Amino acid sequence: MLIERVLQFNEITSYKLIGKRNQSYDYQSHVVQVFMGDLNFRLDLDYEMGKVASINFLEDDKHILQKSDQLNKCRQTEECMENLMEGPLNFRPTYKYDEGCDVYDTSKKQRTPSW
Image: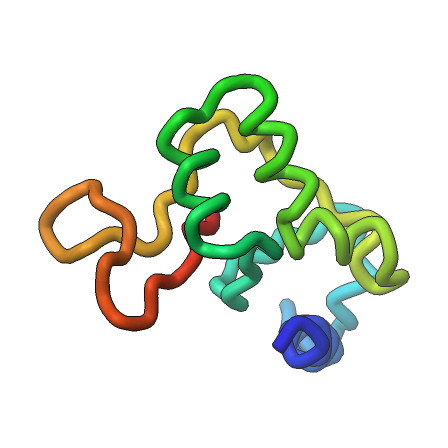
Protein backbone atom coordinates (compact mmCIF):
# COMPACT_ATOMS: atom_id res chain seq x y z
CA MET A 1 0.00 0.00 0.00
CA LEU A 2 2.81 2.44 0.77
CA ILE A 3 4.18 2.14 -2.77
CA GLU A 4 0.68 2.90 -4.09
CA ARG A 5 0.56 6.09 -2.00
CA VAL A 6 3.90 7.27 -3.37
CA LEU A 7 2.75 6.48 -6.92
CA GLN A 8 -0.46 8.44 -6.30
CA PHE A 9 1.56 11.43 -5.09
CA ASN A 10 3.78 11.23 -8.17
CA GLU A 11 0.78 11.00 -10.47
CA ILE A 12 -1.02 13.94 -8.88
CA THR A 13 2.07 16.18 -8.95
CA SER A 14 2.82 15.29 -12.57
CA TYR A 15 -0.38 16.92 -13.83
CA LYS A 16 -0.06 20.17 -15.72
CA LEU A 17 -1.65 23.12 -13.95
CA ILE A 18 -3.41 25.78 -15.98
CA GLY A 19 -2.71 29.36 -14.98
CA LYS A 20 -3.28 32.82 -16.38
CA ARG A 21 -3.70 33.10 -20.13
CA ASN A 22 -4.09 29.29 -20.29
CA GLN A 23 -0.36 28.77 -19.71
CA SER A 24 0.42 25.37 -18.29
CA TYR A 25 2.77 24.91 -15.37
CA ASP A 26 4.34 21.91 -13.74
CA TYR A 27 3.66 21.45 -10.04
CA GLN A 28 7.42 21.28 -9.40
CA SER A 29 8.14 24.53 -11.29
CA HIS A 30 6.81 26.77 -8.52
CA VAL A 31 8.92 28.14 -5.68
CA VAL A 32 6.18 27.38 -3.16
CA GLN A 33 4.02 24.31 -3.60
CA VAL A 34 1.08 23.39 -1.41
CA PHE A 35 -0.13 19.83 -1.44
CA MET A 36 -3.26 18.91 0.46
CA GLY A 37 -4.87 15.54 0.23
CA ASP A 38 -5.55 12.34 2.02
CA LEU A 39 -3.40 9.61 0.54
CA ASN A 40 -3.95 7.51 3.66
CA PHE A 41 -0.41 7.27 4.94
CA ARG A 42 -0.49 5.20 8.11
CA LEU A 43 1.64 4.32 11.11
CA ASP A 44 3.78 1.21 10.74
CA LEU A 45 2.73 -0.14 14.14
CA ASP A 46 0.41 -2.91 15.18
CA TYR A 47 -3.00 -1.87 16.48
CA GLU A 48 -2.31 -2.31 20.21
CA MET A 49 1.00 -0.45 20.21
CA GLY A 50 -0.40 2.36 18.07
CA LYS A 51 -3.48 2.66 20.27
CA VAL A 52 -1.53 2.73 23.54
CA ALA A 53 1.01 5.26 22.23
CA SER A 54 -1.79 7.44 20.84
CA ILE A 55 -3.79 7.39 24.07
CA ASN A 56 -0.79 8.00 26.38
CA PHE A 57 0.88 10.52 24.03
CA LEU A 58 3.88 11.11 26.30
CA GLU A 59 7.22 12.22 24.82
CA ASP A 60 8.41 8.63 24.23
CA ASP A 61 5.05 7.80 22.64
CA LYS A 62 5.25 10.85 20.34
CA HIS A 63 8.72 9.74 19.25
CA ILE A 64 7.49 6.20 18.49
CA LEU A 65 4.49 7.51 16.55
CA GLN A 66 6.49 10.02 14.50
CA LYS A 67 9.25 7.50 13.78
CA SER A 68 6.69 4.99 12.49
CA ASP A 69 4.75 7.54 10.39
CA GLN A 70 4.85 6.41 6.75
CA LEU A 71 4.83 9.97 5.41
CA ASN A 72 7.88 10.85 7.51
CA LYS A 73 9.64 7.73 6.20
CA CYS A 74 8.81 8.66 2.60
CA ARG A 75 10.08 12.19 3.11
CA GLN A 76 13.44 10.67 4.07
CA THR A 77 13.64 7.99 1.36
CA GLU A 78 11.63 9.15 -1.66
CA GLU A 79 13.27 11.81 -3.81
CA CYS A 80 9.87 13.10 -4.93
CA MET A 81 8.95 13.87 -1.32
CA GLU A 82 12.23 15.04 0.15
CA ASN A 83 11.26 18.73 0.14
CA LEU A 84 7.83 18.24 1.70
CA MET A 85 7.39 20.03 5.01
CA GLU A 86 4.69 19.43 7.56
CA GLY A 87 3.72 21.26 10.70
CA PRO A 88 4.48 19.66 14.04
CA LEU A 89 2.35 16.66 14.89
CA ASN A 90 1.75 17.76 18.46
CA PHE A 91 -1.72 16.25 18.63
CA ARG A 92 -2.92 12.67 18.96
CA PRO A 93 -3.61 10.73 15.78
CA THR A 94 -7.22 11.30 14.75
CA TYR A 95 -7.78 8.28 12.49
CA LYS A 96 -9.79 6.12 13.02
CA TYR A 97 -12.28 6.77 15.79
CA ASP A 98 -15.47 4.88 16.36
CA GLU A 99 -18.40 6.93 15.10
CA GLY A 100 -19.41 9.80 17.37
CA CYS A 101 -16.66 9.43 19.98
CA ASP A 102 -12.91 9.53 20.57
CA VAL A 103 -12.39 5.78 21.03
CA TYR A 104 -9.99 4.26 18.50
CA ASP A 105 -11.39 1.73 16.02
CA THR A 106 -13.00 -1.19 17.84
CA SER A 107 -14.45 -2.74 14.66
CA LYS A 108 -13.19 -6.08 13.35
CA LYS A 109 -10.64 -4.16 11.25
CA GLN A 110 -9.03 -2.49 14.30
CA ARG A 111 -7.18 0.02 12.15
CA THR A 112 -4.04 1.42 13.74
CA PRO A 113 -4.40 5.06 14.78
CA SER A 114 -2.82 7.44 12.26
CA TRP A 115 -2.63 11.12 11.36
